[in-house]
Length: 81
Image (cartoon, rainbow, N blue to C red; front, top):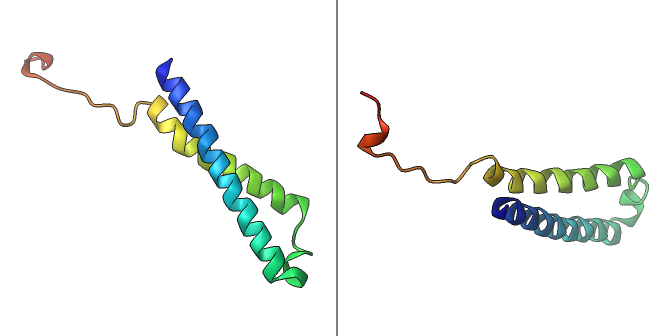
């Protein structure tokens, strides 16, 4: 249960940070290149950005649930002769 709680926390925090990043990049582009970026700003592009944020957040938060990062200690009694 603790792994799920921690992974959910990491998922939501990472997605929040990445959402701020995407919003900042979007505002930067619309301010610095208004005539070039405004026509490109379609629902498809924005949907891709949102999906990318959640996919990257899931890639960051899922490995601990799947067992990555756990330490396993092997002793001589664990081996079969």
